[in-house]
Image 1: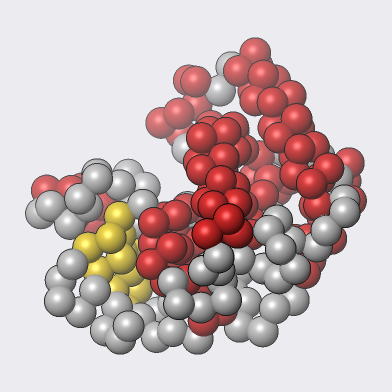
Image 2: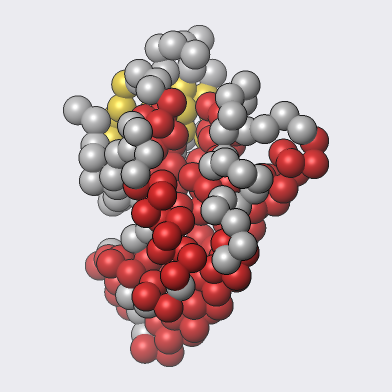
Length: 207
């Protein structure tokens, strides 16, 4: 799995998922950072470097490109303990990852984006922000209930489901204004991931 290149948006939780798993795996790679609303990102679009029109994209040694953050996690995790082989367990891992993109990201990440990017400020109405806050607390509550009786989302060790959910959850308070103090099990889970050997934070960008 050598000679990997990751096209990544440094501020994006979706891009962070790939950087975090690569670090935890101890996998070397070339990082190409392109931030939101920059000329570099516009050029990447123009040159067809983004197959599905967004970051992150993992490029393999032969030029094959893998888009979508959770698909990248599946590729990187395959053949490791991060992506179990048992069919039912793997299905549970994928179920949480589908939930992350279908439910979680569209609320937790969206509220953070509305508060961060000037181009979206007109969408950050008090009503919309309040709606996202309430919905986000509901989603965090679901996660907390699940983690109340187990350390990880699937099985007795961390999987790519945990990486997928961690990316936007760990910064939900600082970037999205969510009250993580209400969710003890989620906060303990966040601390466990941050304590892993090889861990890198959202702002730890490869040179």
